[in-house]
Amino acid sequence: MVATSTVNVRGIFYTALRLYANNVSLHWHTGSSDPPNSVARVPVDASNAIDWPSEGVAGVVAVFNGGFKVAAKAGGASVDGVRLEPLVVGDATIALNDRGQWEMGTWGAPGFPSKSFGTLALRQNLLPLVTNGTIAATALAGWWGKWGDPLKESPSEPRSAIGVDAQGNLIYVASMTGSLPAQLGEALLKAGAVYGMEMDMNPNWPIMGAATTPLHQAGTFSVQLPNSQHDASIYATGWTRDFFVAVAEPPTPGCYWASPGLTHAQFVAGVGVPQPLALTGDTCSH
Image (tube, rainbow, N blue to C red; front, side, top):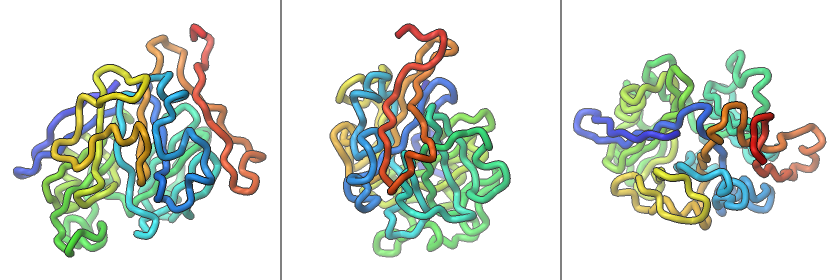
């Protein structure tokens, strides 16, 4: 379901987490303070803590941080039919559907998301860092100011990113050692990504945890981002910023976890409709 490795980019060591497509289901959660006022608008499945009655039943296998604060104007976001921030054409985007499947691409590009994808959540963060296996020209040119506001304007900061490889698996990379956007892009490439986007940065925000055995209640993530300022278990009880939760898919072929999905009527007044997970498929043992 998940695998971790270490990527060396000229002496900077990044932790790489790989989520295998079809073996895990991925969900996006808002934070208690960012996006602002989101907790009052989204249901518990997308709120600021792991939804143990739903995600815990499936079994949590990984968690990791989201992107910049809304105030950074780094892109839009929506979840469960609630638009939290307007989407920006040209920005790198991860899309999630009612089965927790993912697609990544540039918002506004033809064919993204796929026509039949059934998008449930969208999260953007800046322009693409990696496209078609190539690092963004602004990163290579050292225009670090386009890749977030570092503390004390020192461009070498802890950074994180997500991407997809040629097989559609999701890749998360992060290092608590100070690095530049170009080095982060190189880490994505070395981890196998063909498309990728920067996520959160600065010492307080990169957080990752993976479990060797799926967690069905709050517990310890056995694999964590070295030197992170926070234990990944903070996502079990609530966190201030947005984050992602990966849960285990059932081992039986043709059986998977899925939420109800959205219809047009469920977008009324911007109120989110709960999206609890349930086993779906003819081969499921209910």
